[in-house]
Image 1 (cartoon, rainbow, N blue to C red):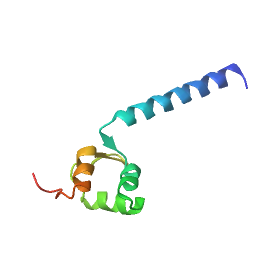
Image 2: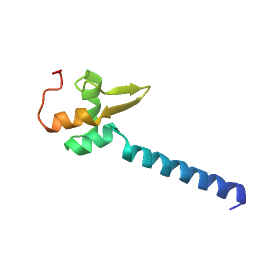
Image 3: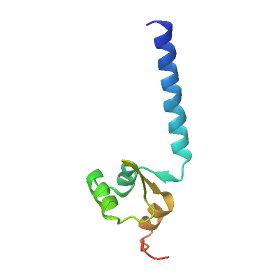
Image 4: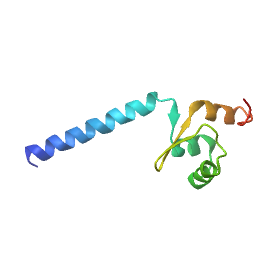
Length: 83
């Protein structure tokens, strides 16, 4: 492996680690994380997002982010549409 390829691999690894660290400290979760927390399938999660069943979820292009407070309310059995 030449030096430029090695440097590119190191940069890619560093970006991946940085992103993982940011997500770990984030107050937003991905649909996959939500489905794992709730124990439901990823397709059910995306269907609920598309229907608007999770108020507060944000869509950026094709990517969804769900605030931790919404997940906490679901886990506590609180209604999501209450103020």
